[in-house]
Image (tube, rainbow, N blue to C red):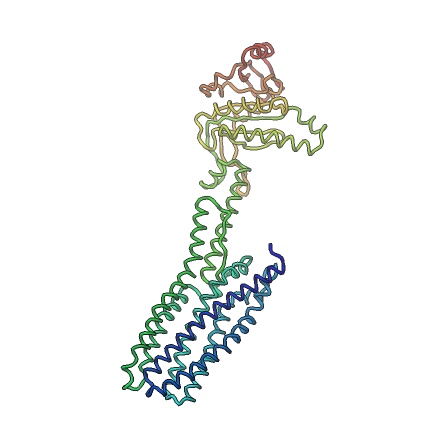
Length: 515
């Protein structure tokens, strides 16, 4: 960030460059108008001596006028721009007055330009009257000068509006326009047509307002006006086209970035008219998309990405459907003792590490964590998305999870498969997607038994039978009397190899029970 003196210097240079453009535009316009009236006078003035006197006096007055009006215009422009320059030299948002001053600068500077041409019309009309020119010549001088003043004022408006776009962007950054405050697209195009075509044509139309015997000498003034019209018209149209095309191009580029997935994008609001409303609308759209994506991401973290996608794509409501699923339940061993012996911060850090491992392993197999329950988690495979191999996925996740948790975070893991109801449960005002059924209950009971088993991982026979090739990694370890179930449950544990398998089978009890 530049410091105070540097900002003041930059603001001064910015004002000088702006007013220099104004000075050049008005100087070019003044020279062309002076040349036009000089040629016109040469065409209609009588003796050469009379024309030479007229031309000499006019040139002297013209140079003197430029020498006076130039510094006066620069001083007036500096005075008009003072509020904006003072704000640009500061490091803060603009207040209401500075905001209005910045947005109104093109109109103010254009008005100052036209005021200078009004003075010029008065000076040269007076000069013509002193030199004894006919009334029609005086009227023609006034009309031609004022038309040129309108053209120069319009050019200065378009130039300043384009040059001040960076200033407008700073002004409108925190408070984009809610209604047009400058010229819209249609007035700009109409203005360009008027300056490029209408003004020169009017000049050509008033040229023949001369005595009939002198009209044959109007070739050069008319050709000059036609050339001015061609050149100026192309300049005006180019300025108007750029003032519309450049900001629209920035919006188009922003849309491409959004389409490619870059929602952290915005375009500078550097126009106070309709285009500024378009730019501000794009930024509001991008902001809305970012908020929507953040909500969707947060929603997905709470309920699972697949559930979130289903809720977004389908009409949500209470109810469920019968699906064949696999439930994996995991619960820390000795969590009550850990909570009593360790500070709360350590307990929270341990739980976050535990749940992070669960989410990572389960997600890698295409499952999702339906809910966290204290120091346990219920994970589901086969809902809401169809997974014909859900049992194999659940069993693989159980094996990997048992290996990942190991001795650092010992946990009981139970897996069961079968039909269950999957859907939204709760009330219309608040509900959640979950799975209800015997597989969930059996997985929870197997988890309790797994805490006492050497592998800490047990699965139901129904899961292994559905697992295909994954079944080869599991071995029966006996039947268990699980709490709340009327019939014994045949359980399986991850198969071991070599001495580990022999020791496991020796320790395994053919028939166990849990209270």
